[in-house]
Length: 589
Image 1 (cartoon, rainbow, N blue to C red):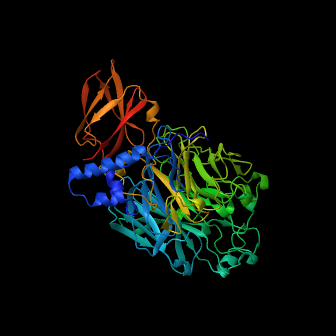
Image 2: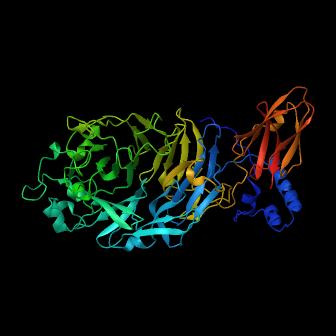
Image 3: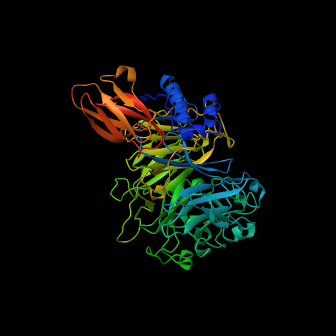
C-alpha cells in the first residue's frame, strides 16, 4: 500500500499542555507560565522542536492518515474492560469523553444522537456472576447529555431476562433493545426442543422491547418464542414442515452445542423508511428482518402490520440451511456482526443507500470480510419476494477485504460503516484496529485502540489480540447536528506518552521553497503579515493540521499582506503557495 508522507506536527497548545500523560520537560515548564507573552515564547520553543523533529512510526493510536482521501468526521468508540466512551478526531486526539464509575463495563453499544445526547449501554464489571450471563451481556441503557449528566436510565438483569449487546435509537426518541428471556427446560421441550439440545437445562431465546424514555415505559415487544417451528416431535407445539416455512424459526437448528445462549443476537437496526427491524443472528449465520408496523399483539402472531405477516420473518439472508434449504455451499455468512441498513448519515440518493452491510467474522480461518448485500424489496406487495423458498440475492454484491488481508481478522465483535464519500470504515474488534478504505481499496486512515485490558498503553508499545477488544466504531460527519456550537478542540489522547506531532501531513519544505514566505508575528493572535518575494501574483492557501484548506488569499507581489486569523482555532497552520508548503505559523488566542 503506498503510504503518504507523515511528518511530526504539533497539535494546538491546549492539547499539549493538558495531555496528562506527557513527560516532556517543555510541557512541565509551560504549565508554570502565567503571562501570555511567556506562554507564546514557550510554545514557540516547542514549535522549533517540532520543525526540527524526525519522522516516527506509531504503534498505537493514529497509524496513518491521508486527509485528502479520508472522510472528515469524529469517531466514537467504547472499548471493553473499562467504562469511558471516547470521541476522537481524525488525528486520534480526544475531543470528548463520557466517563463512568470504574466498576462498570460496556454493555456493549453506544450512539450519539443529533440533539447531542448519548445513548449508552453498560453493565457492572462483576455481572458475569449473574443468573444470566454470556459474552455481550448488558444490563442498563442510559441517556446522557453532552456534559455527561444522566437524563434517563433503564435496567433489565434478573433471573428471567437480561439486556445484551446492542440497542437502536429511533427518530421518535424511543429505543429498541435486545434481551434474553429464560425458558425452562420443560417450556423448551413442550415447544418442541430436542432434549439433547438442552445442554444447560434451559434456553435463552431473544426478545425485543421498545422503550419510550419520556413515558419511561415499554411500548412494543416482539418475541422469537412466538415464531417457532419444529419437526422433531409431532406431539409437541409448533410442529410443521420447516423447509416449507422459512418465515419461522427452527427451534432445533443449533450450531452452539445446545448451550442456553441459542441465538446470541449481537446487533439490532431500525429502518424508519420501511418501519422494519433487522437482527443479526451469528449462530444461525444470518440476519433477519421483521415488521415493526405491528401492534404488540400482532407482533406475537402471523398476521397484521403493513406486511400482513405479523411478527414472522419478512426476510433472512446468509444461511438457507437454517430453514432446511440449500447446502453448505449456499452459506454466505459465518458468525456475522453489525448487520445494518446503509443509511447512517447518507442522503437517499447515495448509490449504496438502503443496501445491507454486515461484518463476516469467520468466513475464513485467516481473515474476515465485509459483505454488501443488495436485497430486493417490493414496495407494492410490501414484501421480500421468495425464489424457490429462498430469498434473493444468492451472492453478496461486494465483498471487502483489507489489502493485507490478515489485519482484518476477528472471530467476534467488529463492524463496518459506509461513509458519505463512499469510503468504508471498518473495525477488526478483537485487535482494536480500525481502518478506512477508499472504493479503490486504498487505506487512508488507520487507528489502533491504545488500551490493554482497559488501561492506556504508551506510544511505542505493541498489542496482541484481545488486549484492546472493541465492539464497534462509528464515524459522525463534522456537520452532524450534535456538534453544532460545540468546541471541537482536542483535549488530549488516550495513549500515554503520545506522539503529539504525528498528524501533520506536509511535503518536504526544504525541497519546495520556490519563493519563501515571511510571516509576522509568529505565533499570531488576531492577524499575520505575510510577504512573498516574487514578481507575480501568488495564490496562497492556509492549511490546518489535517492538511485541509481553511482560507485562500491572493498575495500581492513584493508587498506584505495582512490576513485575519482570529477565526482560526489554536494550532499550527501551513502556508501553501501554488501547491507547495512554504512556511508555518502558530495561532494562539
